[in-house]
Image (tube, rainbow, N blue to C red; front, top):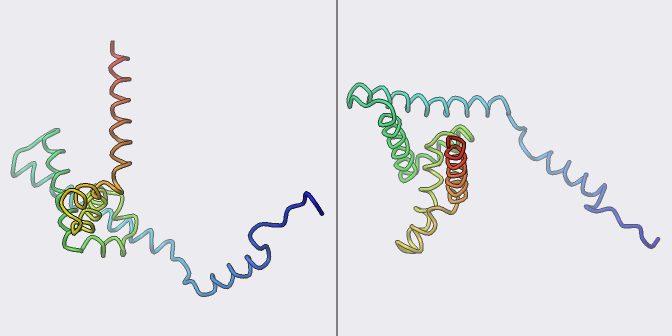
Length: 156
């Protein structure tokens, strides 16, 4: 039987093992998980809207200044909750509902920085801060620059 290859992955044994593992795994509650993600993500967005209304009325901000101030407030709150260890518990309960808003991005930058702060200010804190978020920042800067150049070229 030269030229014929043996089946990869163990065939029936692999299927039996997967069925055995699934028998011990708890069933996934898709609706419940989606509801929690929607509730927590919506709560974060409601907090952002509350901050927007308060800054609009209290600090009399509008337009880009208001949008920037709200973003700063949400990023600060995300980093603060990460530093206090609260955001991890929110993430365990909410799943994707805590990752999607801007606070999730702040968490992804602050978590590695806190984890590696013992390695020093430069090699730990500064270098590890962008481990997770670095590719996102690079892609965002490149995409934004490309769109800006394209828009500029089209407006000539």
